[in-house]
Amino acid sequence: MHEYPKHIAELSSFRKFIQRIESAWPEFRQRRSERLAQVARNGAAPEKLAEDILSDFFTIALDWDLGDLNNQLQYADIVLTKSGLKRLLIEAKHPGSLNAGQSKLQAALHQARGYADQQRVQTVAISDGCLFYAADIVNGGFRDRAWLRLDDDTFSADSWWVSVDGIYRPPEILANPSHARRDPSTASPVVGLPGVGEIQPPAATLLHPQHGRPASCFAYVGDALRTSTWKLPYRFADGRADAAHLSGAIRAVVSNYRGARVKTIPEAALSDVLVRLGKAAAELRKMPTQCPKPQLSYQQLHQALQQLGRLHEVFGCDVPPGGKPCPAPDS
Image (tube, rainbow, N blue to C red; front, side, top):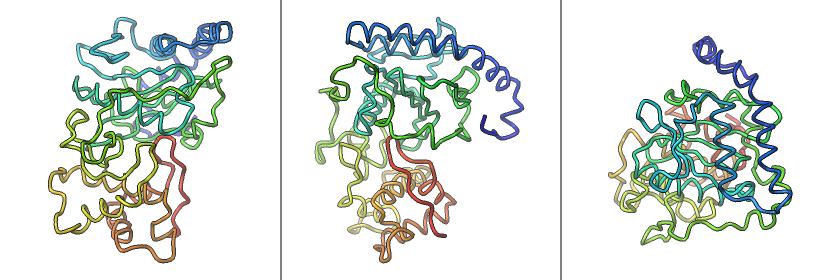
């Protein structure tokens, strides 16, 4: 198991959780296998099947009570509550449907974000019963909480971050990130599932009136249900970095793009916004450590991230869902 910070590893709640999930994981795996038997038998995997697997995950492998689960709450598939507070909102998809890559993940996240903003829930997750990704809504975007494979033979200690005692704590470290965050398109498909990957984003997906893109394409989203709060488009709808808009988005934060610096983004959110822009720039290999003659905007972005002490997040293992890790910088 990955070595966690001492103040986390020594928590009695953490130690008890590890003992519990280690003991319960075989039972969860067996139950999951039994539920998926209908896929091989009937060639169909309804969304309800993923919801049932998630119910088993939270109540058998983790430490939530069955009464903590709320189904179809204001259109959200599952909402976990404790002491009357909504702790986690989950958008479930057909088993195997998130294997199709980043665009499917982004569409599911966008849908979950809309429900979460409506219900004022700060943590969301998406899952197809195989892949499970949870994130906190922080500073106009997502901050990783857990990236798990529910079809793995062994459990991940990162499951603690979505446990009863871990869900309200800000996650500080993710175990085995290179394994947990591998491209979902390389995952094992669900046997007998024709047409996996052909599921389209919801027709009602809200698009920006000017740019025609969903909220996931913007570096800052104040409210997923109000397009006026979406700032700095920097990705295409399929999740790819948009070079044409990216440079301008960077300048709007670090300099003075077209004479109008972005003033509607809270100052506290700008650091996270720069990290998101930096990851997109690294994907395009435009950062100073990646090309011999970088544009001034990318030089300024590199300097800003270096000053903030967050450059490692751009070049390290901390990449967007489905993204490709970038090489470490030379300096």
